[in-house]
Length: 177
Image (tube, rainbow, N blue to C red; front, side, top):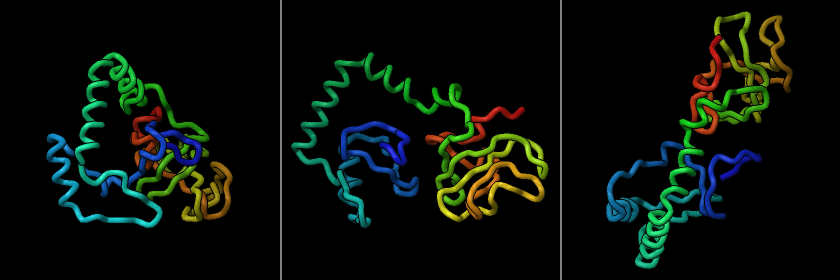
């Protein structure tokens, strides 16, 4: 559940996977339906990735039942964990700041926030990002104004709505004053 030293979620070792939204499907039915969906899907494999779940076998069904029994016996623990880590609880307490690691959604590139504030070229709050790869447009300067400093072609200034932080749209994590 961690990438680049930032923990996005927690799970048992070697059970977590990061997947693009296009590869994720919401399932609202029973485990039987989940089993049908898994067995009907073509087995896609990607280099460097190992699938940890394909269908529900009898032994894994016993494990699921055991986990469900444990979860039902500990409702207070489960409730406090889920509320403490929900995205909604982060929105009120977390603000984007210099040093925040964010995802630039338009290019699926990770970047570090190097500037938060107004610009000379447009109204409102903007974010200056230093991208990990040379897919930016500048070195932190736009026109005659330097907003931050980074390597050439690693910088970009974007509206907060163009980034996400731990799955939350950046526009919810800045003060628009």
